[in-house]
Length: 288
Length: 288
Image 1 (spheres, rainbow over the protein chains, first blue to last red):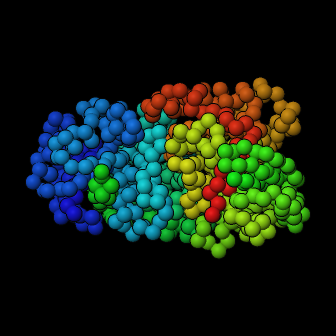
Image 2 (tube, each protein chain N blue to C red; image 1 turned 90 degrees about the vertical axis):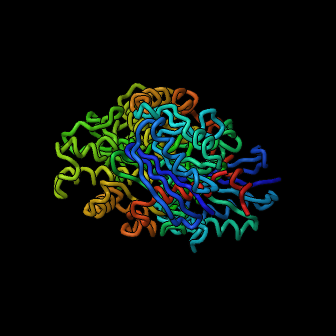
Image 3 (cartoon, chains in turn red, purple; image 1 turned 180 degrees about the horizontal axis):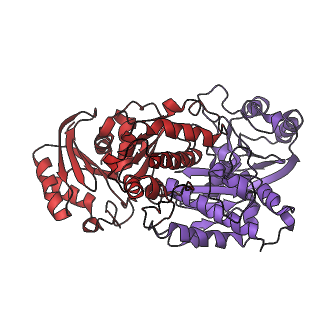
């Protein structure tokens, strides 16, 4: 089965062709501009690929309630050219195949559980920590959405008293994304992300905030596996520090096999940087 | 169909007989003592009731993974007489009917969505604020459990600088239950719960902590309906205050129909104090 996949991000769109085993046979990346400039390139790429279905993991917020008139729209994004844009409808109209849409990070969660090492997990939480912070949750192979997709990156955390950074989120003073995503780290240190040394105190703050957020995710969702991806998590010293602080915070209140082995419980993506695009292939398998 | 229902709490067990419409025909309440004292009374009550199935919403923590040897056990509870007690197995053995078990608060969530006013909701979050704080989440008619049932009452919240109370939770310094449940309110004020006046500042702290916790629940789960029950929430001045602070904290970051009408979104139990016992009837319907 020939499947199309799109990972739509704020700076680039990854377009791929693959199959139901999660194998990718062709992949390109194009810069994100306006829909008028970006979408025709997408249509052109898939035009002669003979795809039978398409999946797209897309930046949000998205309208994902199927009973809503604007199902499949990008809604109130700060990327103004894409606000109120019917990305699902336009893909269907131009490519004439069934298309399934979800958020990029829910797609990544689905990718890890469908094509990664975690197919036996009943539930999987995928958190990305990069330019922004987001979370996707899969239960029994199905992406969880309620009134909206999750917006886990914006939960509030307790600021370390030594951390004088005011936060980068225009909506919330102490939210995780505003204190722990890449731009927050740059704002706090006054350095480009790539120039910040691993031993900068900023990373300790981020590890603290991530640990507090993970504690909340664990207490609310009780996931059987947690995958942490994204650029900030690519700093390999972060994960052990996050696990250490999380263990302290949980303080053995919950006793499960998973929590007694945080090394196996909170992990990096088994698909490396391809969780998102392979998740889009998994979405294509669900398209009707 | 004649169904049995048990709401098992730390101070009392409610036993009821009812039917598949959620109608209760008989109900008694017995004090919680040791299993050796309490359980025979339960067996005796149901003995001649001709129930065809039984549901139990029980205090936890519980082992709810069906593939575990101790499925249906009460596990590491501080109520030591009940620790490591096979409540599911004993009920099945003595009553000879199928039995379904869940936490008390997940049962209440199921009760509200099955027999209450919220049957059209895809997802419903029930939070109880009483002697303890707990949450149950129902998705498409099914109670959500992951590696364990949720333990939502223990998420961390930011302490108000004016609140000098050290918290009542032996595990976590700043957790919601330790700062906002009934015993915390008594510890903070030095008064019996019933004697604390509505305008005591302690209730303002509790409203703040509840609002922060609800913000996390909303961002993580995105429930389509939130029901707040329990003794502390029976103070009718609390809910408007919680809604007000929550609205401030969310700061219009998420735009949904639900969040634009918090009065309809965050509500009291439509079944009054019977969410739990009617939830146990709903559990009985699922027993196999």
